[in-house]
Length: 307
Ligand SMILES: [Fe+2]
Image (cartoon, rainbow, N blue to C red; front, top):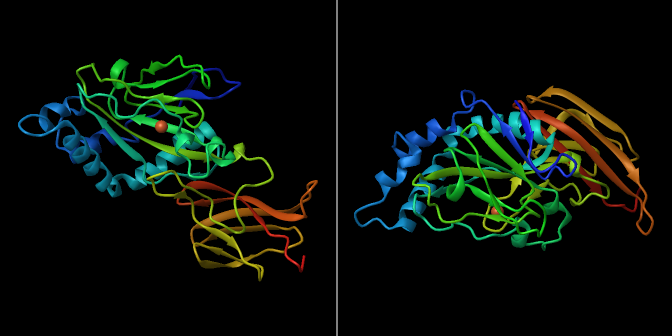
């Protein structure tokens, strides 16, 4: 895998990553779902007669979304390989991804915006600011079929990001305005995207609640999450509600390690955190591997009266 730094490595706000379409042939799946030999010419099959553009777009996006189960395993592998390769271990990522279809001749399917404009927790939520967007075209995109992105926050110098099938754009969609324009290329664009929360982006104090699943909510989308790891008040540990037999933790700061239990392995470290103006809290961080996918965990315990 090669990574071409797009805007500058220091800011790491945008990067184009190559991947193997033989390993992750999303376009082949999409062709089957949409019953076409050529996604770029999907408009020829779906438009015409009395079919309105918007109705056809909804139909195509709905078909891809409904069929997601057929590539879900591939998608998780893709995240573990391509997204984790670019961003490092993830706290959480969005499942399922958001599918988009922009037919040839269609107007913009999203005005210029920052994703954090839609945050229910406000545009300055520190969690959302740390997200990165992985944008995956299943057709070549350029000009009017591409995503247009500004090169730095509020610069407004929108430019299309040309990509081939087999390339993804990893970028800071939370802070960089982006959107689409009229697709005047004569070719339909099919793409999907998902948001990732990289573990490396976290800084103490943690944002997530007490024992709570690390999840992100964006308006109109399902929460993204990894398996839920809960450190219970009695010292036991549960993974998606199932107690891990060998795992216990100690509230004064300890390390917990388990291997190959229920197909998982992981390590969690607890430590005290003292900050000016805050009571002492216990924070945990760690990672978990399940089905070949790495999840990062980060969280905190309330300063209970017994601590
Ligand atoms: Fe967006």
